[in-house]
Amino acid sequence: MTDIAAPAPISGRSLWADAWARLRANRAAVVSGVYLILVALACIIGPSFTGHQFTTIYQNYVRVPPSLSPYPKPDMIGTAVEEVVKRARVELAAWREEDGRVVVTVTSAKPIDERVTRYLDRSDLFEHAKVDEISADGLRLTMSADIKRTYFLLGTDISGRDMLTRTLIAGRVSLSIGLLAGLVAVVIGVAYGATSGFIGGKTDEVMMRIVDVLYSLPFIFFVIMLVVFFGRNFILMFLAVGAVLWLDMARIVRGQALSIKRQEYVQAAEALGVTNAGILVRHVIPNLLGPVVIYMTLLVPQVIILESFLSYLGLGVQEPMSSWGVQISQGAKNMPYANWLLYVPSFFLTTTLFALNFIGDGLRDALDPKDR
Image (cartoon, rainbow, N blue to C red):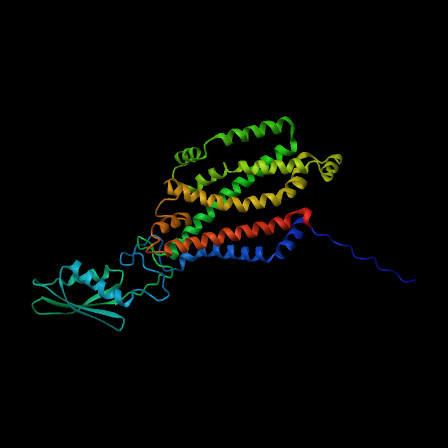
């Protein structure tokens, strides 16, 4: 008699494995996730490769437009030479450019100090200046210096700082603020709202009245008090702001929890003797992930915009640090003659907000148990 092999057991997929498979099938969400990862990596490690410090000021390159070719441009060298000679208080006799160096001849009614070459080195356009020739009476001197080639791929701002470096540093601030405040709001709001909605009764009434009282407090006044208490440490401040923004999340989660606790699978878990904490963790909170993720993707942009508003009032990010919101505010003031100051941070902020929304839609579809 031939033995019939038993069929291999069928292994099911967990909620998270199924959600991951559904998320990968959403192309918009995947592309948005990849884009956000690239933006985050660029903001973290990018400033180390731009060749500029975000606080370095180039006085000779104030509001220069973006360019793929290095600065200085040919028409800038002559102007820079004239400024150097003027600061040195000598007369310009002639200058020329040869083999990547600038050769300048100056004259004066008094003997010229050879340390005049320092004025070339102090310029952002030249370096390694030296004296080539000086007349016997010291009234005529020829000096030369290397032309310092500098790249400003996204131009410079109103203070002469590299926009690429400043934008990446600003991205660190904006993304970290949005994520920190968003995570704090989600953790507090989900825990508070799920507990209130699931327990119900008088406990729910008391917890929701506390939320109503907090809603009545003027938000800006509360933020000002937080700034006074925490000082200018924006990380601590926005952690505290996130602890205020959980109110909407708590109400959303409470409404969902009231609906979920009436479902058959929750009643079955209660009949089996599962504790309230176990039901919250295993059944209520996992079924709340869809609305929570959607609200989280909306909360991060809300915090970023809030940071821009507070910075405009002088309560948020302060110099020399910056954020995309601060850069957009500065760019709007310089729009007629330096439009890249507005376009560059606006592009990063807008694309990041779109990516967050696409990811939110994808996660909502992947985590919704009713849409399987």
